[in-house]
Length: 325
Image 1 (cartoon, rainbow, N blue to C red):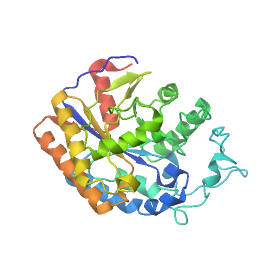
Image 2 (cartoon, rainbow, N blue to C red):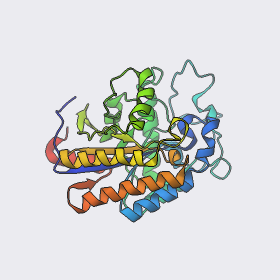
Image 3 (tube, rainbow, N blue to C red):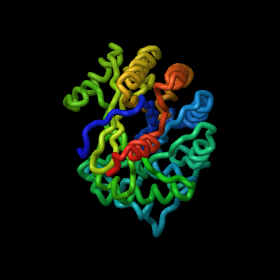
């Protein structure tokens, strides 16, 4: 870690969305029903962003910049160095349908990119690797991540997008030097909650406990790590599936509001995040909850105590304060 946490001029609200479609679960069938609803959810989210003038960072899997793909000399995406997964039978890209957006739209998202770029409230498109490879896996070597990032940056440039922000699949942080080499300014670190240092096997159970008891969320301070900013998550806006099916929407809203208020009081960051497909588990209710959160953001913003920035804007702001590497 290069620097001590710094104090901001005012609180900052960051919203980041891990936008993956079927790549997020490598095509696991139980989630496909949600991926098929995800485009409608994204339309609704963009409408809410325009209504409340909310900026967000869309951390997109790079394959979604495509509307079709095909093998080259019989190899799928030969430009990508494969993770050497001993547990995976076959090739990492065996799940890729090598098709097009009309026939397999759960795997392609060029239309989504256009919608985000055309939103009346300014949005940021960030990077979530090209194929949702888990970066901290022992079989994902630096060369694998480097190849994915280079392809992502090239595809983004073709749409006029310069990538500044990165979100690690499954929030598993590794190879920060590769991010720095590829000119990223910031990443979203693991949620800064009271149980982040607990053993991994306990975290899921504690996560459920934390949500049902509505324990307060934290505002976070930006920290420089290996030359780029860690804008850690504050709270994952929980889906309405499985264990969370009976969790009242009001609990999610209350946890978010508590973190936003702390960001204002402490002049820190409240970083809310989720996957658009999470909202597909109960669109009407979860979108209504988000609307209450955005209204609360605007309440503090109108008082001049809170600013809503993208991840990239936050990193640029921090660098302008002479905290650049």
